[in-house]
Image 1 (spheres, rainbow, N blue to C red):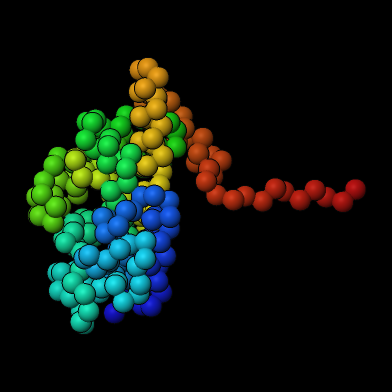
Image 2 (image 1 turned 30 degrees about the horizontal axis):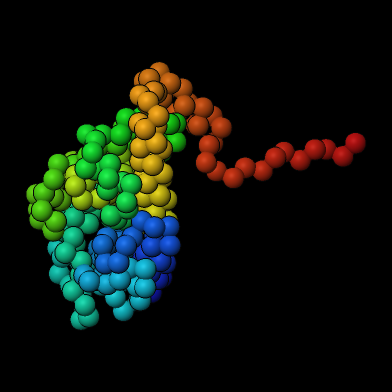
Length: 221
């Protein structure tokens, strides 16, 4: 059974994503996995105003646990991700710039070192009708060795070890698509070479990049 904390995580994530402009109206869906159960947004819910009773519990075979609203039509997409990857959260949005990128480009090449937090070049999963097994299969493939992908003529998806991390990945993807759009308007964007990417990864590991670190204490003199 999903916990109250998991339900409130989904509510908070939806409210934040809506406040950041990544979720509009009922477009998009969010889930978090707790063991063999998943807390996922209900179909038709206005996500920026989501309430706890609009978060639905399902098992890993898509069977709804208890009553309440029907889960999102993209529930199979979420469950397919959980079946393939060891993650605890999925965020699917129709964020404006990410969605535009899913229509206009074949991929987002590596243009900035922070993009490596998403795994590298961002793939665009080929188009398929929403809510179908074909869409789930194509998106799962696009996420291989990645924590985010675009869904052609549809939107974006981000995953993470926690729901907070999945939200951060969705925000990073939207920022990245915005930067790429602006760079294309200015000229031909430069990309990072494989060697440059490897150097970034080595530097990040050596410096524990992305974590708050305490400065060493000076000894009293």
